[in-house]
Length: 117
Image (cartoon, rainbow, N blue to C red; front, side, top):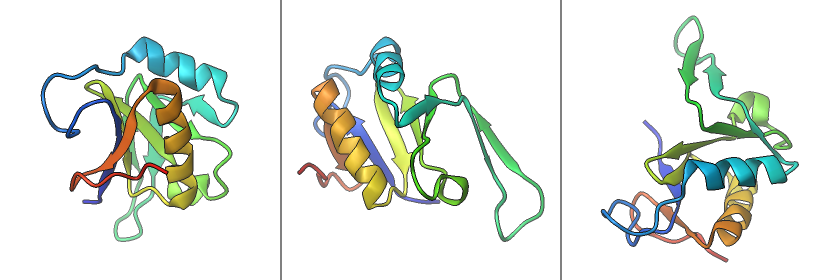
């Protein structure tokens, strides 16, 4: 399954309301950040099965400068007004904090804990 960490303006991340991050804001952040690329497709080859899994989403980005992007993925996905990352490592968490500062948001895990500096 995995554990999601969210860049969000909601308190907590799962609550209704709040100030959503728009797709336009997300696109501007990705375009302005040389570490990010809007890739729109994620592919992975799970070790426990044959073949390739593929996920497509118009607002899916990747941290192109992540040293393990080919194995880790380093994908950031806009979903319902927030950016969601599955199982981020410390490198990706640091990038998420920087993105959150630009967006006036916070970094929050599935269990409502914050990963802010």
